[in-house]
Image 1 (cartoon, rainbow, N blue to C red):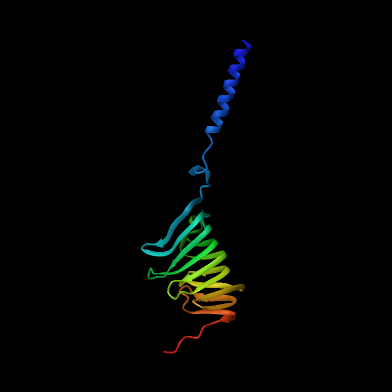
Image 2: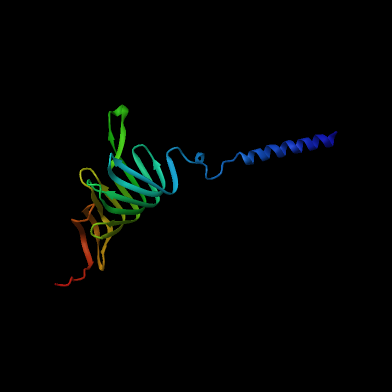
Length: 195
């Protein structure tokens, strides 16, 4: 009788432990993530208003915090102008897109179309139109009426185009990098050939 009771108790414990292990969620389950977080390899998202694109975002982790969108790991953001032309690529370790508040205080929503952006960590901006590459550690993109790039005066930058390399501190430009300004520039610029 004691043997039967021990066997029964052993089987009962075994079943309970077996059920607990099988009820665990796999690491790839959608239920393992927070409601506002999306993970992917990569995640691709568009921010647009109607037919007009503002950004195409590619990253490994996206978190929506109502008024901000946080992007992490392998961030690649394509920036578009008002004519829906892809003008600039931005690469970084992380970025924050800041939504513009709209609506009444008790019914406030956030619009990320033309939202400002802060990118940090191994930041590189590539102008599609003129092949400039800008490298720094932190950058701000203001996108209210017209897209503008701003780097604080204490941030070191490197601007590269073909064999030309300019270094300096701080940077101001339109997003197409047609008109730009560097503080304390130094570097090399190859002289073009006269034809």
